[in-house]
Image (cartoon, chains in turn cyan, green):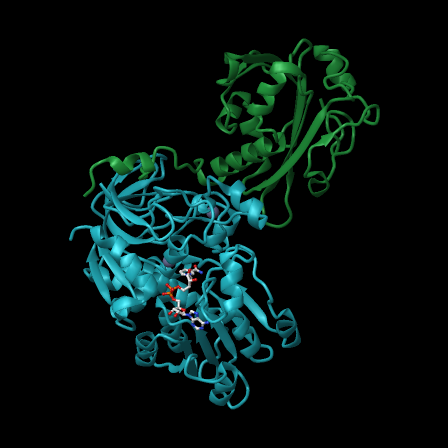
Length: 388
Length: 221
Ligand SMILES: NC(=O)c1ccc[n+]([C@@H]2O[C@H](COP(=O)([O-])OP(=O)(O)OC[C@H]3O[C@@H](n4cnc5c(N)ncnc54)[C@H](O)[C@@H]3O)[C@@H](O)[C@H]2O)c1
Ligand SMILES: [Zn+2]
Ligand SMILES: [Zn+2]
């Protein structure tokens, strides 16, 4: 089959590789009908996630048709159409039973690696380096899906892939980021740093959850326009003197009740961080995170869907402490959100395809990665089509 | 055989998991030699000391599993189950209800290490302790205990393993086998045990496709 392989920093190749097969009794194999490139893939593309190996197949946002099931798979059969959550969860451990799906104990074959880094390992993730399990990803014609009865959600309706694909990651991720804000309907003001796909879904989810106002911060004009179209007030951080002043002006001096960092470890804005990250003195550039910590209102919530991988410098812990801020973060507990969010899509409350700017054949993945990374051609979200 | 709870086969009180995350190497003369419990000595008469005090390595690791102590105990009591959770090649043959024959092999120097082991303490649903019989090249002993975790967490499974690392070539092979860090081996075995019990299988990626560099010359699409 054809698969999108990481061959080094900023070097993607579409290669012919063997087809995946059933390796464990609870596996199934999908024929991928649609897959996307995520902002998280850019951290891999740019070489910021350790233990990625040349040849690894990337991709954790995908959906498709079941073509093979293992002997212990009871809920799926060949021909079923499914969307697959990007975290791999067993369904049997205590964390899964408490719906802390991304904290699953049992799916990472390389748990020892992540333990060495973080003390404990959570759920594995498709196509996200050895650290996160080393599973081959879904930017391919076929993909193996372990624990198939626990993850994939079966689609019964005939909604097109475009409206369903983002249930695999960014819609639930944006939604959980908003849910973590403890929004009081009609009252809460939420500020969102980063208007990439995750930020876009966080903005719309916050409004769906009743936020009185959502303020979106980025410096990419078309992304800010999309945020405005979704109902947010946009701040271009390159065009204002001080983001903090601007936020105070938009909130009657109170500051946002909740701040969402939908930027993560590759924030732009600080030469200091860029240099340190390049020299590997710091893993993560946390410019947006620091801003959010300073801006958020007393007693408020800082919700962090943006990915951080290691060490961060100059975190204003004093500000977080002085204001009694609650921090909520982590990989999305995907399985919680699949059904309720599918319902929102089916009921027409949201059409997730709004975020798609480009559809290209799987074979064009290398160019698509570069375009998405460099934000060329108005690119906000790329869908790769293995059949094109 | 009913020895007191809270003690392992050495008769010492079990260290709490948190205080025992590192393998301990007994300093010369500082460790009490491990003495066979009286009841076991009567039954199987292994050597007086399984692990000499001067070179013995002791490892303790714990994991919490969302299954009843009885279920987990049953898996371990069926001692031929153990190779399923140990990553390196190991075969265990049941000889009698309490005796078994172990053989571990590795690709290095085509050596095989074999020994006879015997269960010296057995409290259903609570504890199993075993040790190698006299004459083992690598004298070893182990205990696994099962205790309820607080609330709905499941069962705390604590394994203690003691062995005398051999000298010479065999020692080098053994170090390789146990990855220099026997504690890590125990951790991995417990992790695999937990996955098997909770998820019904051990996660793997072995056999999946990738575009490793050697594939780069293969025809492209
Ligand atoms: N928690 C999870 O489970 C999860 C899931 C998916 C993605 N993510 C993470 O979410 C983050 C965003 O993902 P995405 O797909 O939207 O990525 P993206 O790269 O498309 O978007 C990031 C956006 O942040 C903007 N930005 C950069 N620096 C900024 C700054 N200082 N202030 C304001 N905006 C700034 C960029 O211009 C860009 O629009 C990434 O870190 C990604 O890894 C996390
Ligand atoms: Zn993603
Ligand atoms: Zn689990």
